[in-house]
Amino acid sequence: MTEERRRAIWAIYVWCRRTDELVDGPNASHITPQALDRWERRLEDLFAGRPYDMLDAALSDTITKFPIDIQPFKDMIDGMRTDLKKARYKNFDELYMYCYYVAGTVGLMSVPVMGIAPESKATAESVYGAALALGLANQLTNILRDVGEDARRGRIYLPQDELAEAGLSDEDIFKGVVTEKWRKFMKRQIKRARMFFEEAEQGVTELRKESRWPVWASMLLYRQILDEIEANDYNNFTKRAYVGKAKKVLALPVAYGKSLLLPYSLRNNQT
Ligand SMILES: Nc1ncnc2c1ncn2[C@@H]1O[C@H](COP(=O)(O)OP(=O)(O)OP(=O)(O)O)[C@@H](O)[C@H]1O
Ligand SMILES: CC(C)=CCC/C(C)=C/CC/C(C)=C/CC/C(C)=C/COP(=O)(O)OP(=O)(O)O
Ligand SMILES: [Mn+2]
Image (cartoon, rainbow, N blue to C red; front, top):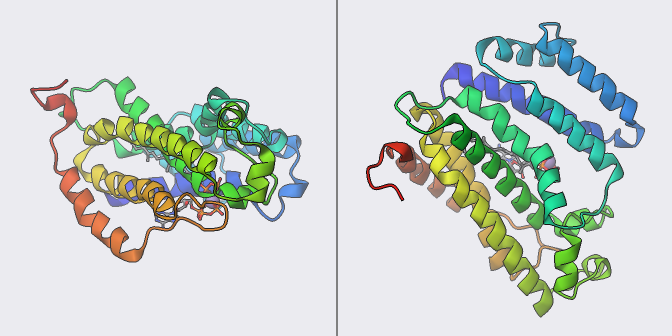
């Protein structure tokens, strides 16, 4: 990306990282809903050009340079409020909402910085939709990779109704034994995550040329985690799915090649 855009994405990353650390970091047990209220007021202040510290200032600066909306930031804080109270998700609708709050929002924050290509004929809605889908796909992948690690912290993000349909219970997840039932359940979850990656693909082509490479690269890298879960024979209880160096390096030229593609909205035989 251009230097200016790179710095802006950095500022957004830092704010999200700090928001996540409030509820997941070493001091999380001291974080109350009031602390999140204060964090939200601080967000409003930095959007009004009154940053509290130098990391806030990086985001204040970003906001003067790019047309970024405060709503996805507020939504992410709301997501953290839910995370403080909620440890189970009844069905995919509930999980979808959680993924929107903690990851779909990141996609929405990023689009104004990355920019839609001036030649693109796509609607802004469709590009934001794709960005949302990429955030969702990443978060679903993250959840599928971290099943064991999350269970050891008492957390199960998987849809309870789908677990029950597969004949699985929370106990099975805490036990962490890969069975035929588990493989079948995981196949369905991986398939859904891949659908969100596919939904995001067209949108990447509509971004400004200079912004496409990093987005393709991160997408290709992150979606390979799903392949690694398969390669581990669905043992995401005790093995962390990990994309090796060689595969990572190979993804970069592939991503570069994809960044040269014509925007989807300019292709004549669209379906
Ligand atoms: N330098 C990086 N470049 C590309 N992707 C990265 C980089 N660092 C981290 N990631 C990806 O972004 C995600 C979020 O990063 P984070 O630092 O939280 O790591 P993590 O391994 O997910 O840790 P945890 O789940 O314990 O918070 C990670 O899952 C990782 O795969
Ligand atoms: C596709 C278009 C048009 C634009 C791109 C829009 C972008 C950049 C979308 C990506 C959004 C993104 C990076 C979401 C992050 C989701 C994610 C995997 C978060 C996981 O972070 P962790 O800190 O590992 O979470 P846990 O702490 O829960 O493990
Ligand atoms: Mn993390």
